[in-house]
Length: 468
Image (tube, rainbow, N blue to C red; front, side):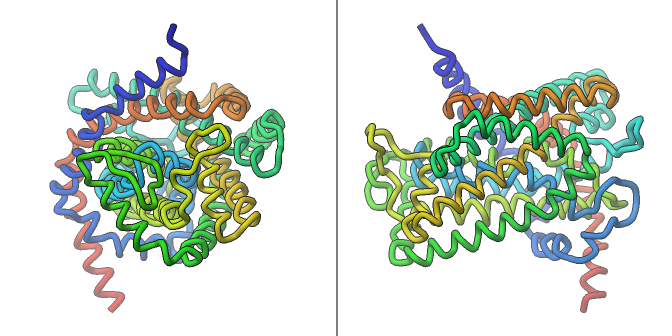
C-alpha cells in the first residue's frame, strides 16, 4: 500500500521530468535569443539602477510602493530556504554538480524573470480599494487575442498560485524554521508553529505597504549578514576550494555516476545533477514561475521595462550570489556525504549548519539557524501577497482577502509540524503546475517582449551619455 509520501514522490518525479526541464530552461534560452541577450548585456545597467537612490524613492507614475521595495518584497519571497536548505538538498540528491545547473538555469532565468515582470506591469490594473494589482493572470486575460483561452489560462495560473503559496511560500518555510530552531535551540516545533502563525497574521493584516516596509529593511540586512559569514567560512576552508570547484564541474557534466573528493560517498549522474539543480534553482529564484511579477506590479513606475530590469536582478542576487555562497561553503567544508547516527545522509538545514560549524563553531550553527528563520519568515510574508492577489483574481475583488490571510497563517503551523520530504515534494509539484501556463504565456508574447525591450535601448543609451 503506497503512502501519501510515496504518491507525492511519484508525481514529483513525473512533473519534474525531462519535459519540464526542457520547458523551463528552453523558454529562458528562447527568450534570451529572441531578445538578443539584452538581459545579459544590460545586467550591469540593471544592477546600477537597482542600487541607485532613485529606486528607493516612490518614483513616477502609478503604483503602491517604491521600485526598490518592489524588488525587496519579491526577494523576500525568493531569498529563503531555497538558498540554504534547497542548495544543500540539491547537492545531496543530485551531487555537487547540481550547483552548476542552478547557475545555468539562473543565467537564462534572467530573461524569463524580466519578461514576466515586464508584461505584468504593462497589463496591471487598479482594484476596488485603489491598490495596484497585476500578474500573469491579468496578462493572459488582457493580452491574449483569444479571450476564452486567456480566461482559462489566467484562471489556471491563479489557482496554481494559491496552491503554490501554501507550499513553496508557506509549508517549506515554516518547516525549515521549526527544524533549524529545534536542532540548534531545542525549541519544540509546535511552539515555533504557533509563533510563526501569530506574528505572520499581525504583519499580513497591514497589506502590501506594511509587508514592503518590513522587507526593505530585513532582506538587505539578512542577505549581507549571511554572505559575510559565508565568505568567512569559505576563506577558512580555502585550501579545499580548488578541489571543491573541480568536483562541482566534474559531477555536473559526467554522464556516469561518479563520487569521491568533496562528494564523499555521494554518487550522481549528469541527469540527476540537472534534475535537482534546475528544480532547486527554480525553487530558489522562481524565474519562469510568474510569482515575482505579481509583486513587481505594485511598483510605482511609468516604465514597465525599467522596473522589469530592477526586478530581473532578483535572480542574480538570489542564485548567482547567495546560492553560490552556500554551495561553496558546503563544497569546501568536507561535510558533503556525511551521515548521521542512523546512517542517513546529512541534508537540508543540518548540512549547511554543519558546513558553517567547521569554521565558526557553535556560532555558525546559531547564525545559520537565525538566517533560516529570517529568510524563511520573510518568504512567508512575500508569498502571502502573491497568493492573496491570485485569490483576489479568482474571486473578482479583494472582499474575501481576509479569509485567505487567516487560512494562510494557520497553514504555517501545519508546515512547522510536517515531515520534510512530504513538504518538499508538494512544493515541487505546485511549482510545476504554476510554471506551465506562465511559460506558455511568455512564449506566445515573446515578440511583444522583444519589441519593447529593443525600444528601451534608446533610454539606456541616453542615460549612459548623461552619466559620462
